Image (cartoon, rainbow, N blue to C red; front, top):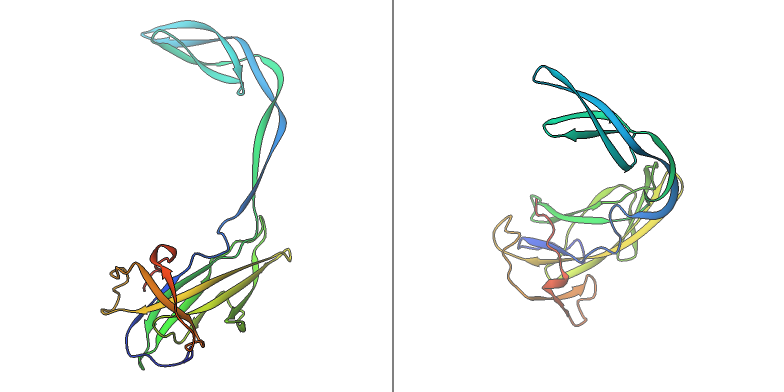
Amino acid sequence: MNLLKKISSTALMLLLPAAGAYADEVCTTKQVSVPVYSGWASCSAYSNGQWVTINDYVGTSFTSSVRIYEGIYSCTAQVPYAGTQLVNVEECTTVISAGISVSQNYQNNIGHNIVRVTSNSDANEGESLTGYKWWVNGAYKSSSSTFSMDNFDSGYYANIKLEVTDSSGATATTTSRVYIYAHSGAGNCGSNDATEYAVRKVGEEDKEAVMVSADDLVMPQCL
């Protein structure tokens, strides 16, 4: 039994949550000095045919103008500069991460179930992804951002590995295990109510199946 063996029934894939994360960030907190404003502020408001002067004391503000109020009147006043203050600021930067998404794409005219595997990855902040390397069960497969596999048998899985490179030369890697099981009815992607699945690795049909809880499997989109 192998990836190219024809199957007669429609199949779905199940994807174990990927080892890589999407949109990873590294955040740091640092202290910076910012201007602060405080003191008496004054402005004039016009209402009912007359001007009214409003005076109010403004505590610590990080903006030089604030809205002050007196009864039904309000206006925007300038607040005196009061110096600087240290505040904590969190800065986050996107870092390179590799992610894999999988879908049952279609069934071709000879009954093969086509599995589409796609990179869902991020580059370092300010960079772009420039390279992809895919392996299926340890064998090099593709250098594109997406590729198709033809074709899985029900109850088996394949190990998928992805390595991405960005324009800075940084790399990230992730792996996933893709499962499939037979079902009836085209596009019937969410109807299986099993609580666990018996799975074997592609090419290891002579070995005992491993029971996998449905809670550990994610149903991918079925196109």
